[in-house]
Length: 424
Image 1: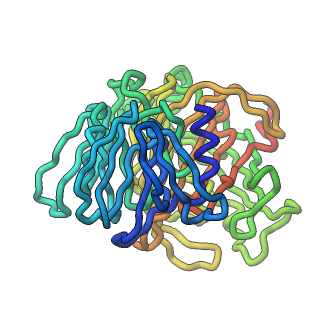
Image 2: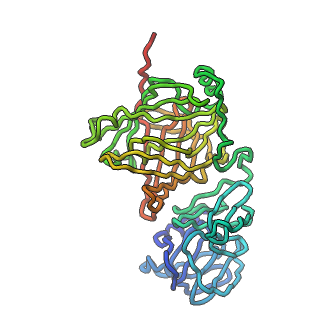
Image 3: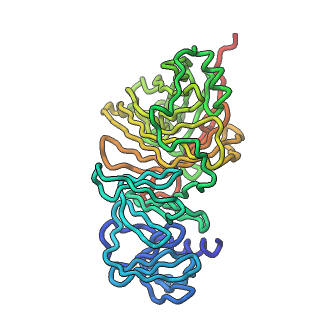
């Protein structure tokens, strides 16, 4: 693993995937990275290449067991198994546009409408909606290159490149948890009043905040330094009300925004400092992530759908049900905006300790992707890490755009807690 890491650091600047049909050679390494190279020699145990983006480094020798394939439009494709054994296949045209499925038997081909489930990968072979879905077992898949150029790997043996996301191992997946949200995933209890729902939910899901009056302050950070989004440096949230609505427990959270000096952000309407957004929790304790503080600095008029369902019994390896959340509202300047956020591949990494300016917390770490589309434009893809603490909810939220240019995530970090409840 150390050898692979050193080699990948040396060639890391060539990991971008060309968007058009290629007339050059690509090397795919087993960590899920693509490298633009010139092949000098292929022997039984190693391949000698020149990195076209780092020619000053000269020739580099890489063990063949770290390589998945050499794709060459002007010659042949050469594939390697994990022992370094070679297989030569006529190249044809190695198109890299769209979503590409790479199998362990060295086949690769474009697919459409991909769904990654615990039972396997489901996809169509054309963009036609009426075409049938095909199923491929996870054990047969090497990786998927998505349309936005990030990849999902189905092995953790070789680590993974910065553009790659590791699919949870099949043996650690909670098969009782569905992968996509539907109406049947929600369990409202219209016969229960607010107190009954509070008592019931609190016993089941501790990973969110219920008590009205608890104020949480977050700031935006990048590489440990104070940052901002649209002139906003701090967000304060406070549960202003708690009630039963449509059979669900609904904490209404007041959101307040501030600049780096904890003052009002210039040219922002006053109602942004009184805006409340709801969080919904059903009778089975599923916390419905329905608002993204990290990217959605907008006044939401209404929303439909849910992002992620977070149960109370979080366990390492658990796959979380994902869906699409559509919010309609206004920007700081008063312009109408429709934001569609599709959550994919969210899973539980495990328990970890987290230090923030507000103190030390034991958290459950979640990972996933968010495809965010504004006013119907092409989506921006975010790689997210979310840390949840009992009785509080979000402690830290890392978000990094997968565009090949970002190297550090933007972090929403808890900086202060304050109990504003009135003592009777």
